Length: 131
Image (tube, rainbow, N blue to C red; front, side, top):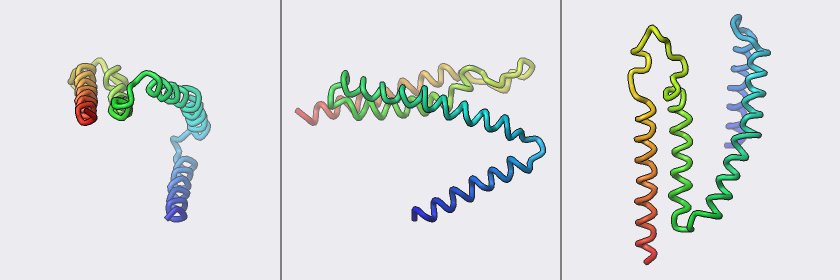
């Protein structure tokens, strides 16, 4: 299974490289710079933030609440990463008000409130089961 996944991954990477090199509008140097910045941002910003969050979680969150808080943090990060471009209005065109017709900030806040309410309820259930 692992060999099959490696072959499929290499095939997908090769297909992407072929498309990058043969597409007339592509800028391989620009793509390389983008990839380097993305990797550096991941390695020097995201990974340390996740490690510090794990240390803080282990140090300050009581054991019965750790799993719910961990799950809520993961879901919150994923939802925020997807919603953030809409919240900040990236790509908004002044002449087209229908491009971003919703209040995405309020929607994100509502989703995060539900996620953390579920984590709180999960923690309460765990505490009651322990007793």
